[in-house]
Amino acid sequence: MSQYYDVGDQTLWNPSNAASRLFMSQVSVYQAELGLPSGIAGCRQASPRTAV
Image 1 (cartoon, rainbow, N blue to C red):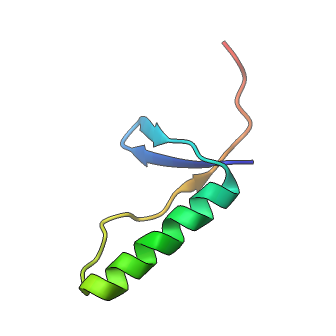
Image 2: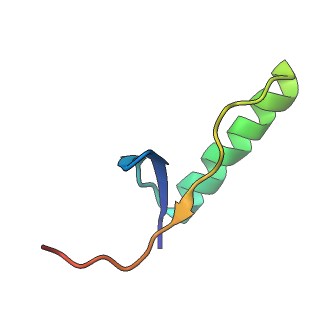
Image 3: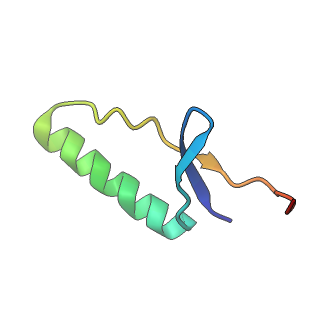
């Protein structure tokens, strides 16, 4: 399993679950320190895809 970070229909990043958790943890630290929202809404879980 992995996570997808998208903008519209474009996938920007597809890290593993562990890397995604680490990234979002860092985002939380920066938000708390700066007192500002990051603008990152989270990610979606990978769904089975078929090769075309």
